[in-house]
Image (cartoon, rainbow over all chains, first blue to last red; front, top):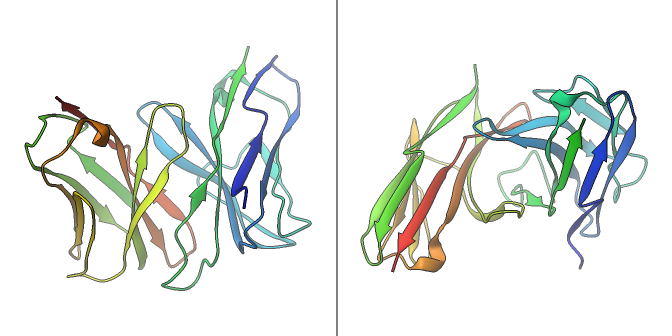
Length: 116
Length: 109
């Protein structure tokens, strides 16, 4: 298993540009999520999905879109990049989300995004 | 409001000097409390899940405990390779996860 993979590792955008951060997992995990990590703020949930075709907003969803057409993939779209979106983005997945077993999340290596 | 607070922000220990990290939480229905380790430039690595007050889990030099309001990560006789940031997270019954800001641990040889 490759686990949770993310591309790209690094990205620089100009204000107003759009882009998609890719996330994939090969563990047949039900739950997938996107976080951003900023100094002093901890990891904050952007969007999550509990299965193919089902997505929901987390704590900081503004400026981001997601979709989940397959179990394996969960891309994050930045619609019009802003300097406030400069951050490290992590994708995570877990086998289950609504049980008391197998609900631990496994994280990808992250994408470091800079918006100028 | 659901939230997680970790203390201290940073901790420096001599090799072999045991200590504890604290994670206090308020959440509307706890589905689970998680501990992660994060090395610089990498994604968090899962350590433990705790579900009920009184529960304990151990792995090598680490032991996690849970009460109704907080969790502790006890580190016994730490080694330099234990240096990392330790993150605490809770999952609410609303399927969302909330993370603390972490404790940065440095173990000096």
